[in-house]
Image (cartoon, rainbow, N blue to C red; front, side, top):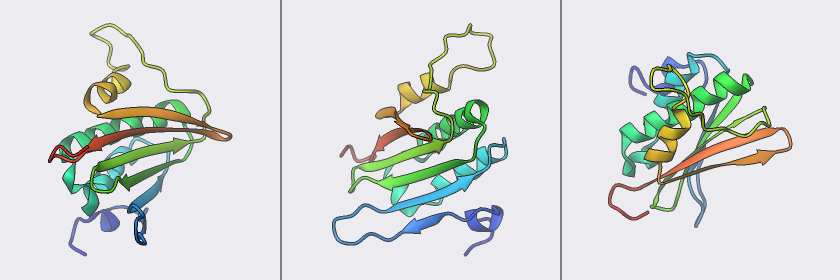
Length: 149
């Protein structure tokens, strides 16, 4: 492992799942609901070898947006999961313990907050959320840069 890799800089190590035939690769990490988890989540997605087909800057930004929303609004531990979509790109999801659905805000241009879901909507190929018995999962998908999404 090289200096500065995700595992060495974080006290949280991602778990990875090696695929069997026909199964997508996936990795996940559980983070605390604190601001310091945002850069950890960005480094986590940047460390994934299977996410290389997606635009790394968009991937990191969108991950930061949905993790920030979970920290600000759910205030529960959160699980960040990335799934390779069979050569078509990557899906990143954040699961938290708050069942309230995400809400796009329409604050004024001088407001320091309220743009996260607008950014996700504008920059992700697809996004959405799933209600769970014990919270929700907010997700986005980015296709591969070669256009095969």
